[in-house]
Image (cartoon, rainbow, N blue to C red):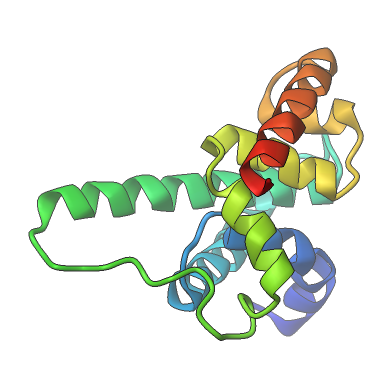
Length: 159
């Protein structure tokens, strides 16, 4: 990966990638693996970007799909292996998981379905409903209803 591509096409969108990877991981190690995989796949598939949406939308959708795929692989590996593996506490002290109030929010978000996590993260990024719908693959009206329901669930979880 050239440093120019990384600097111009990944670094400006690293906040998006970090938020998505954090929402779908429980440890710093997994977070780093997911982040690295997303960056690698953005680079590998850059020529497939057709410009039909904004680059940020494409990076978001790619990040989300990669995280969901990695979760499925991890679940399949867990089902096929016998071990005493314990998932590390999401609040372990490291740079991506060190803010206590943010940890509470992410812990609540992690209790949502995988798609609802994506919707609320996009909402928190202040993405327009139309763009969220485009990324998720549904109408903006459906997104508006879904966000209202997600907010209600998060309030219950946090209280």
